[in-house]
Image (cartoon, rainbow, N blue to C red; front, side, top):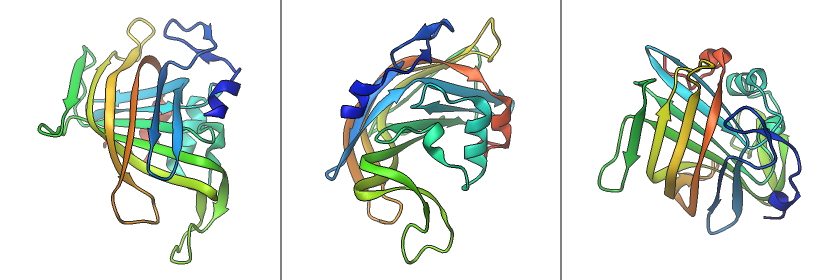
Amino acid sequence: MIWMTLVTLLACDKDGEIADEPQILGSVATADAEADVVIYRAFGFHTNDGAMFYLTSTPDSDCPSVAKYLSSKQVDPEGIWAPGTCNLSAVLPDYDPAGMTVSRTADAPTTEVTWSVKCALGEGAFDWGKRDEQSEDEDYFWAGDDAYEWIGNGKEFTVDFSGDGSPEDPYIVDIVEMTDFTGNYPTVLDTILADGSISGSIEAQACNDLYSAYIFPK
């Protein structure tokens, strides 16, 4: 997509140095529109109760802004979720800092991790209000004549997780490959399939604020 070619902002690479390239790349496309996967930053937190990781498409995102967005519907997402892209999150009910590989295929589903791939497909803008006439609550959503907000997950993937979040042993999320997506548009109950592929490896910054996020397993 055009947005991807225009990105000149900076991100942190796995060594903590400045890099001008996203660390995880890919795309997700439904029959209606598509979005880039361009992950610049990642944030993680774990306890004995499990772990979660949040991967963002903006190089200037930080821990407080991610935690605030994940704890309230009244936070404009654009600071951590770039228009025309996807953000990813992973929740693991049991996490081994020494390292673990989680795989899923159509014939072998897994309960070791729950992925969420949230995409702002097509051309649009983040808007505040009610998604449709049936909505009772207001929040931020991806809107426009050619915009489709899609939330789903990869039906097939292999991902390596490791690290305790310390400087000596940082969190690493290594998506060997994620393909074959299924999800839905928030205002449509029917399943919306998507094509695409996601891969790459990134160091996740330790973010204790994520403990207050509604998706952290407690």
